[in-house]
Image (spheres, rainbow, N blue to C red):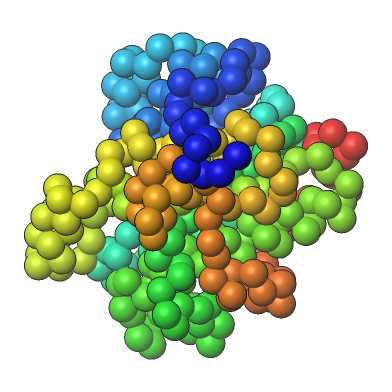
Length: 306
């Protein structure tokens, strides 16, 4: 069936998730809040992994279904380790949703460039630490910004210590998301694990990320384009929900099916040539292990990813 004739997939098409447990990072607003809401509505027990637990509790009180709130700050590896150390049961789905976009120059608690640390290194560490508990899949929210001309991993200055440019750092972190997904799937396959790795992007969705971008002029411009061009956060969350619940091959990438992948319903997304480079993926993985001191659990995964 062609894209023009198939019935568009919506949140109403989510399967029953009764008995399943899902962790959604950054679930207090925007795409994360919608993702948590819809997965809980479908019957999953949803863990809102958030920096601000008070905000998380307020959101959880509005959701239909089974939820709980746990503290997680992806910009602090001690928080990531504490979250993972406190996990003592099986986990079906991990949604690496939390992120920051084009923020003023800042450093994480561990000294990493904030966007690299929050968008890639934190989720990298969290995923590997939780993998012994995982039974189904990992979904990481990327961005079509990784496809902008010239975007690459600057291995010589990955933490932007010599030259920080907010958008370039953001684009690098989103390319890192896709390279992470690719190498993670390679490692899961080699380990004989049934767990799969997926990526998704929301297209151009109106969320609170734009309000945190560097520069007043940029924030004003994004506010205008949000109003005129962006799709809703409910639509932007659909690719993530699709990737989290539908039968897909490992290393899949889902985004909106409209023109330029800016708007629309879930469909296959395009990646840059760099995002499909196995050598880059392996090199970034090795660097990420060195920076975070977290490694792939390998044999600890076991025959059922536990």
